[in-house]
Length: 464
Image (cartoon, rainbow, N blue to C red; front, top):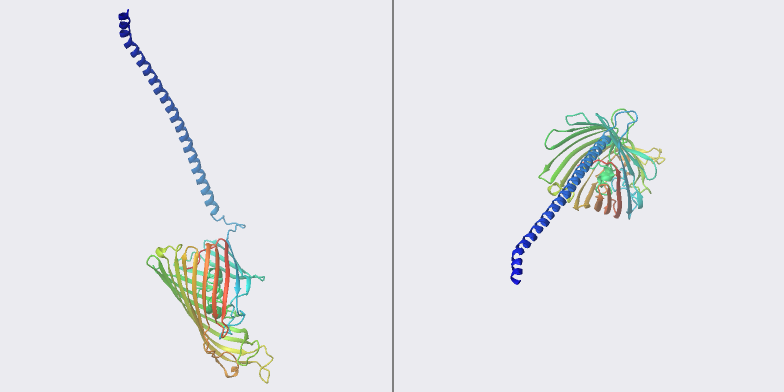
């Protein structure tokens, strides 16, 4: 019996082993089939998601293109019609706090026959705001207007001119009211100044800035280097003119500028200016005199004024990158000769036994210069140093005017100024400035100014 059982096991065992192997193979085939089905389903899902993503991307691109086209269409000037008007507008807001030791109304020594309009105010002061409007009028002309809003009330027009855009051959013609192209600083508006105030030479010889009502022609030469020539004819409304109410021109200006680049980071510009005008009964009040009249006297001048000037500017930025660090060095020199007739103390009832005011000859040559450097030592931060100096000259007066103050003062007005400003953006500026002003003999004035300048709206780039 045992032998029979062993024989059966020996015969049927291989069959059992083979049967188990077939079952395993079927299970493996089933798993493979299931994996195939799962992967095919997953691939199908991924392909569907890919198609959806591609469709969304195309829709987004189409929307972006449509939006860009709409923006471009909106930015184009509207078709000319009676109601079409699309100027660029800007508003400049500015204010100061001034800490002064002396009365700012006291005139600069030796320049009592100048306006001496320094614009200083003790304590808090809202400075004039500038409202600007500009736009292309048509393919031939462009218009610009800048209104000055006085803090005490009232509006004056700083600029109001029309400028050509298509003369060609380097010519540009401007007519209306504008800041003269003489010198370097004169064309710049107050918010673009690197210091709170103008240099002494601008304050005394130009009453801060020369503004003209007239015409200006500029020519830019077709050369690699910068070469610009200009000429102006105007009414002579700004000091040292008096704005004569007569036919013809009351002032004339000639100027020339040249400049070029040096390497990858440097550039320069130099210029020469000639200015001529005529004053008729120009009045200066509170003029001190040799007789020591309390509060001074009022004099009246009629005659010619001829001024020559030189200006130079050097700018440097490593590799031309002005956003990191940059440096600007600039200076100007002006020399003026005035000659004509001066009426002494014309407000008095009479300074002679006959009770007639004294009018006699008057001539003087005066000059002044400044040099300043402004260094942006890191993004948004700048510091600047400026030195001013004037020469009052020695006036030649007729014998009848011997008691007039206009003589030899033997004093050189000067000033040292240091400023630091922070520019959070191109539209805002915060500044602190200190100065030691020795422009008035025996009256040293240590000054402190805090200033803000804020720009709203569209605003074009400033000149070089």
